[in-house]
Amino acid sequence: MRRLAGAICGGLLLITGHLVPVAGAQQIAGVSAAPKPKSYVVFVAEPQVVKAGKPAVLELKFKVVDGYHVNSHLPKSELLIPTQLKVETAAGVKASAVVYPAGHVFSFSFDPKEKLDVYSGPFALTLPVVAEAGEHTVEAVLRYQACDNAACYPPKSLPVQVVFSAK
Image 1 (cartoon, rainbow, N blue to C red):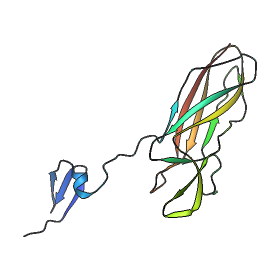
Image 2 (image 1 turned 90 degrees about the vertical axis):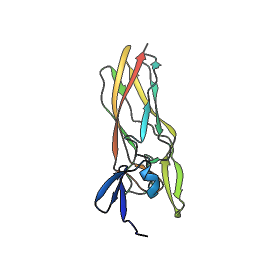
Image 3 (image 1 turned 180 degrees about the vertical axis):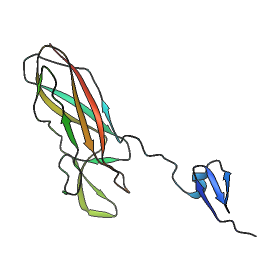
Image 4 (image 1 turned 60 degrees about the horizontal axis):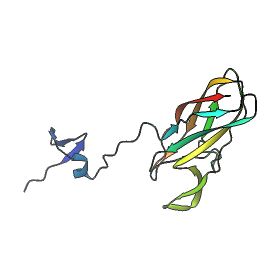
């Protein structure tokens, strides 16, 4: 019996210099076909109402895609990239420093002694504001680095628009 040398790439099987379409090619090679998400964190926008001219708090809800985690705002190592929200100034809105939740301890099965401080699943940041009466939009950017159980990925920036009313 003749043995064929082959490699699979994008649903095509390369056999001795010829590309042959193969259904389910990734499963044949034992390679995971799950694509990486374009964004590892999503912003869950909800309408919010605050009292005009009074100190108030906006809640910014995020969700880390299942199977991933992001470093908290205070990672355990200076080599890790913290999650940070940069808020732009908005007319009629005075914003104070973002308040971050505590992360939770995470360790990999291959190195249980190393403890990381991460966010996974849903998490919320709060933004103290004082706003003039009316409709407002605060622009912000969430910078984060996502990891799974095998690797960390390049940092990403997620644009965020927080729309709220002050009455």
